[in-house]
Length: 292
Image (tube, rainbow, N blue to C red):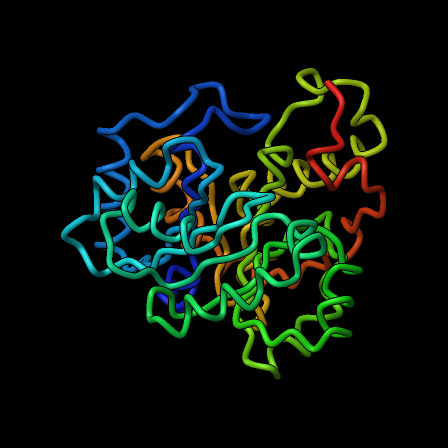
């Protein structure tokens, strides 16, 4: 028997939908305050401790802060605004929103901000030395950005990266990052819900990926799995990944994801080869390139 708990502990909650109407498959808009409270209560009960937010996620930080102001069981990861010129001011705003004296990690949300103003990295290190954050790092989109950080000998603690059944661009770096004790947090596990979408609901932009999506849905139907099971298993089963961030449109999404993990024992026995789902086209794997 596998331990579902070891997988649940690798889950983190992405809170962008707490502050914004976000995601291709999101038909409900922002998560209500009532459901945010329910989500965080269930997360705490199940041992999920990471919450990911950002200054750019609408009022997500405020919503999180209102719900956990007296609860120290969550590790908060936030990101300062793109193109900021004052990280000290940013962290003070984030801490005020989150009603906290310190948070777990603070990241560059936009890599170009680092390139334009590399001195901000020193400012971020100062904030860490002040004890306002435990870990610092970057949210990245391209492997070339990571290569540049290596070349510049930037000693970061944590990275947030896109990774899923389709998007495997960072995969070859995982072991190296792991050897450097860098925490790897994964976003875009479900590619903004693309893995669940039906053909009739997608624009012609996605035509080149329809065969893979159809194959994914066929596998799920063949083995009586939920559509999200294989994508979630693929990420959580990677030993080099520390946290997989899940965006939620409501409490039912979290309940479903928790139930999905109960299906993992079945998948392990199947020993499926999921390598064929790898997608090379950036216009498919990078949501900001999607056309409606």
